[in-house]
Image (cartoon, rainbow, N blue to C red; front, side):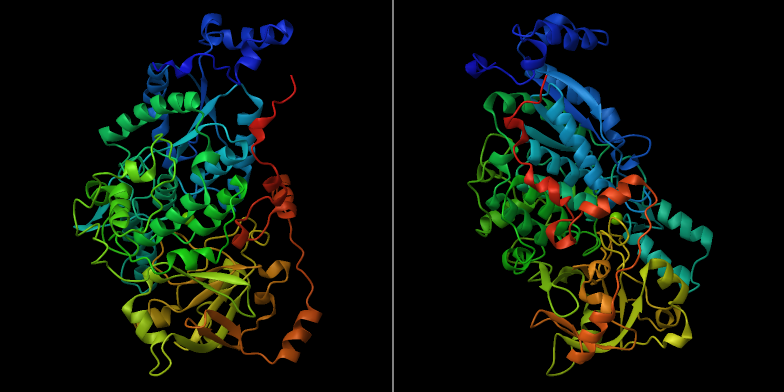
Length: 591
Ligand code: FES
Ligand code: MG
């Protein structure tokens, strides 16, 4: 062990080894003895490392961490630390109603209290399913004790009748086939279940793989951590190495604030474009940045990331899944290609104790069918476009999933490329959409844009992944798989829909979408970065003046607290009051 370990007094010693307060020290010690620790250990001046356990029976995407725990703890022990595992409020993307997004901030709050209020000197953040990763990084950013992420890894690739069946992506495709009457209920179920062949999180480049790539791009995980499939032996090795490393990080005092800098966030935005990452990354990264005290704005996604080419050929933007991505080198191979092209900030510090540039030495694509070189991408300009207009201050569009067919149909009017004018069809949430989408009275045709509102952070609550609305069955049967869709909610990161989403401010707080009516003409202009309702100004103002906010019924106390405190998606959907609390570790809680 390095001699940097001498003369270091740890935060945990304020609990377990404080001769100035024998009364409390004895109380802290005696109860931790009765499980597995000895007094000698607890008073040995070794760092105590928390392990934030996000896996459970209720959180299957992260369940692998239950089995990785032995390896994490062994790494911490071998590194000279003392591991203490603790549970995190479960966040399961598909199982939690009304939305898992509602619980991101709840798990965040819980983590802040644990990291602040217990004798911990560092923490391993187990991550995986969509919101678990940002929740853990947000909490670590607020408290600012040494922290490292360990992803559980994606599932093995799913297969259905000789074709790759990717998490989520197979659902969107199969739903269309079911609506068109091409498959029945049983085949629908079998196809979707085929996409989940093992432990792990979604195997597409959905929000889970994206957010773990973001953690790695930020410098918060060991190099190569995020893409290792959950059942692979490399995953167990990574768990051990991560445990070992966090102990060193505590001695070196490498904190989230040393790693998650403005430059690190810019690296993450660039990586997100290159991997064809999820539209959920902007609000999550925004939230992490705000809790870290880093200036980041939704428009940075276009400024920093739009001109980055798509390098990763993975569903939903491409064809492969997690196993191929891992074998091609995963995130460090993508970053290696970006580094060669001079697109990264290389000097940023990372949890390895080395700079990102040093971490990436020797990394490049091992399979150019899956990870393309920078000079031969799948497409150019693969980042997000940030739109504005009278319907919202900001909304995002993921360009890497705009298909040729979609572009031709809606954005290629000769002499007017990138512009589309259409009739608005407005739905009040997903129930209304399902009730009416096939209603012939709406007359939905190719010259319509579908809108959904009331599905943002306050409205839903939590913001629902419902903006990627399927066209009516009649259009599907004509081969029109996508209409332009717009909403103040989000969409699944596994969706191949080029929706316009995360519209902020949302309708229930008086955002522009609130005043739109079915039948209004709307104009999308990608060149000008605008979307507007073509409604006369006086009429628009009259609608605003007549508007009253809807009455929102809460079903749980947390929903009510959340609705009072949450901000908008373009600001990360944070609990606004929480963003004032930074570097909490600098003051100890009372005894
Ligand atoms: Fe949990 Fe996709 S649903 S990772
Ligand atoms: Mg989702």
